[in-house]
Amino acid sequence: MKWYIIRHADKEQGDFYNPDLRHQDQPISEEGHLKAQKLFSYFSDKPIDKIYVSEYIRTKQTIKNVAEKKKISPIADSRLNEIDNGLIEGLSEQVLQQRYPDVWNAFKDRDRDFQFPEGESGEDARNRIESFFKDKQASKEDIILVSHDGLIRLLMCYILGIAVYRRWDFRVDTCGIMEIEYQTTFKRWKLIRFNHICT
Image (cartoon, rainbow, N blue to C red):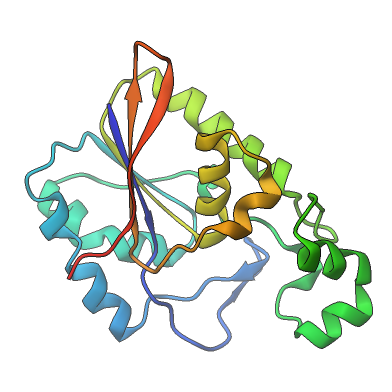
């Protein structure tokens, strides 16, 4: 069983606020479309049973070409949504420091978990990831997940069994691919590759 986790492609700049998500819901940019088109070269010879995406439009757009060529309809799952940063959405660093100093200090120190005001903590989002994994592992299917930078970094913490505040140690590029394989004997996931970019 292999899973492929992809960060969405580059997104458009501008105001695309979606009140249902409480976040900006930007479509992918022209550059993002070009990067997304290259993904099929990686998946052309790989068996894929299902594709899961977050509720954001950019994840669906990122995997559209692969999904069409594989004849698979992506399934939206809210557990793959980006970490909810609550009231800090759209704030500058200066305003964040002034308005929420505890959050800013925890972000800057990176030695403890914290909760975004009216949003999630790292553990909250990690629990979503765990729920998704436990739900889908039983199927033993090869799947693609398309998600977001913050959630993918937390997913790495979950896979490696490290504290959620260590998520800042990872960088995930747009259209970066992570590949993991479940080792039945050891009941653990093995990281095959991380942040692979199709050229």
